[in-house]
Image (cartoon, rainbow over all chains, first blue to last red; front, side):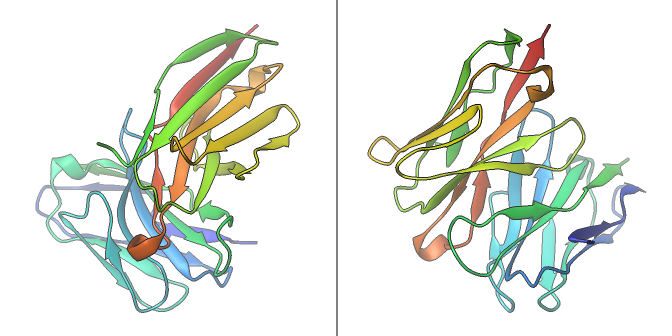
Length: 114
Length: 112
């Protein structure tokens, strides 16, 4: 029962480097999400994909790009990392139908930009 | 104004106490509501959905007031294991269908 799998779990980047955070789900969910969590800030939505083929900006999209590669995979790219992007990143997915459906989260990626 | 706002606490209560958390949301078209729980350095997990008529799950009771755009969570007979961060979550409707927005979380510590 893999659920939502994020890679990598930890990463240290130098300022200006680029990287892609990978997320895959095996629950046939339509909706997928990327959040970042900073101390005292709760989870802030970066981008979401309500269904395959669509992506929308969330609260804090600047400095990020996303790709909904297929129904299973939703990647988050940092083109030129900045120290302000040091955070814990969570990917989530949600069932295709119904309003009161649970979102399942990956274990998070702890990213440090130095 | 933030889309979802919570009192961040922290709340420090003794075992057996009753504690209530509040949450407000700004989008009147919001369609569904949830409470999630997050343990330290872990991913959030669903605690309970919030239904219009209010709902209960053991020691936990959730209420929704659409007119006031307000959600609450009541925990009775607190246990040490209830110590966590509680997150209010709102599912948008309309043109933002599918968008899940979290509040900043309320920290609860239950002590012996």
